[in-house]
Image (cartoon, rainbow, N blue to C red; front, side, top):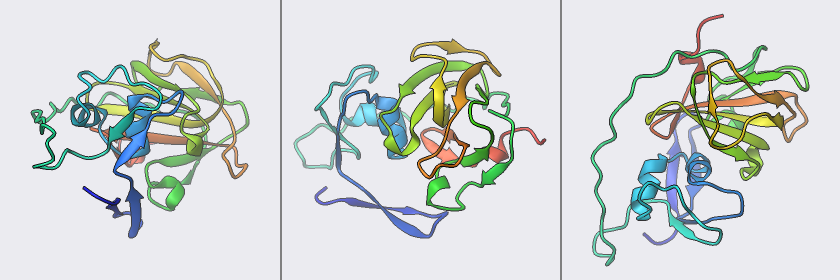
Length: 208
């Protein structure tokens, strides 16, 4: 597909540009790239012939859509992913929801929770840390936790990360300390993703 693909962001009634390819930068993983473009990491792996997708290299170009028919590239088909049940969720930190899901461009994929500089950020459920770093500039120091093959959670704008990629974490484990957004607000950017697509976390978190 030539040119850039248009993706409609329904919650904002706006047009969002997605490029055809992404060049892997230092520190990026398949998970962080999938989160950047609202994709399922498993789809991304299939489209690029990456097997289980555990290894990508700096400078590598990744397709962000399926190969078109007649392109000369094999169209790899994968059965629809099995849907795993959502885990039992917990709130990631104390504080009010300062910006709700879809309320602005900043929250088209998650919510913002206000708090104090350095306050604890906690895993919302058991899982594995699949990304820990600052390769997504829009989110500062970020953590991504895979809870099962369907569900991920993401935590952005941390001042300090207390876990590393590959760590297994338990629900309510202290994983990071709250930092400041690019606009200087003390907030956590928090996301829940189902098969790579962001959903409103408040729908899944327990009522306070």
